[in-house]
Length: 495
Image 1 (tube, rainbow, N blue to C red):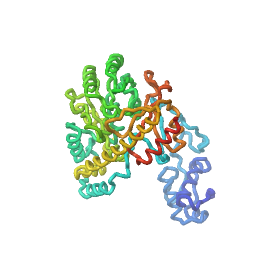
Image 2: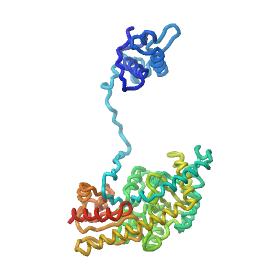
Image 3: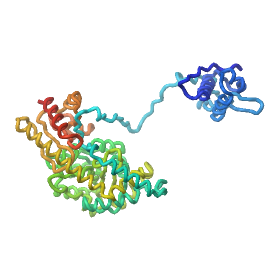
Image 4: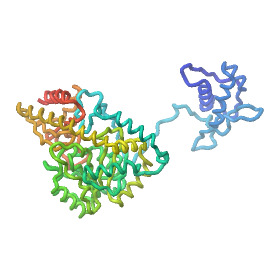
């Protein structure tokens, strides 16, 4: 047969790949039918002005894929049994039906759960960034951490690079255990290292939640946690909040009304309101959950940063019934890209979570774990924590002074100064539902009250925009000058 026409592109793949694609296309469209004998490699090389070895490479690829077959002294021919036949009519050869791209329609599938993909917010596009959990990366000791990474690689036990150690490398677990004991008064029996706190929350919900079961959450809460819970099949039950945190009376009421399996809390610097739950309420909540057989997820996301007093010890530090599942992360002290979070809980819960993690993700990045372990062992982690606490405290006082200045000028804003954390929850005294979009036009990123409700909650105030007067102002990730300029823009927009 005469060689099929091929137009070679100088900027395309290698010539043998272009030739293979052309022959494959001709077979799929029926131009070359089953059993058709191809010209010899020498004849094709002359026709296409190619090296014979180039042609042979193309033909051998097609033989390996099943489009061609080669027989001694007979050369190459189109195979009778092509790689893709009609599933509804196995005897129908591919070339006897249309197989061009135009003949297919995109399949639609019925998903048991419809997941929404939200493009990440390009924070670099904003000049003023009030994101609540954004650390000051310019102050991270990258050179010091680089040395820790190098040291970890030099002393590397290559067995750690294989599968195994699902719960985290022993060196890091030892360092985290020592740190929690010293800094938080929490003595773990064991811990599970995760790819960030988000994976931890997903694992917990997946392990606990069955058909029709519920997770109780604060009415204003952390949106990614809620999305993870819903993805695991949970129904969310909002628990009301007041100026002092979660309302115990409402929790008691909802525990009676719904089959609640878990309670999700951010008791220290509640997200987003920054309220710290009192010891009295913590004890009342613990007692209620114990009586109703409910486990508590304690998300302690920024424990390191306290400015006015030492933070209240985690609920997990006094957990005689083994019902508290403690979740924390290095993202606020290091950076989100480190993807290091961890869970502390009872042996029974840990066994279930570890088995589930092994199904989803065999292990974390070993080199990062070892580097962080080395960094902690050398004291770099705690030195950095102290430096950042001092830096964030100065920004905390700066933002406080700015807000007090606006109050003195008669602006109707109010706020309760938190004991620590990386953000302030400010009541601007006016509706802020359109503020985010207007601020974006001026290069300002911030979060408004409506973002922290769960959109499907019937018990939330989400639909009452007149009550949306709060904004969350993160102060850790930008300089005092930027805080001053950005806040002035917000004030000018609102008033």
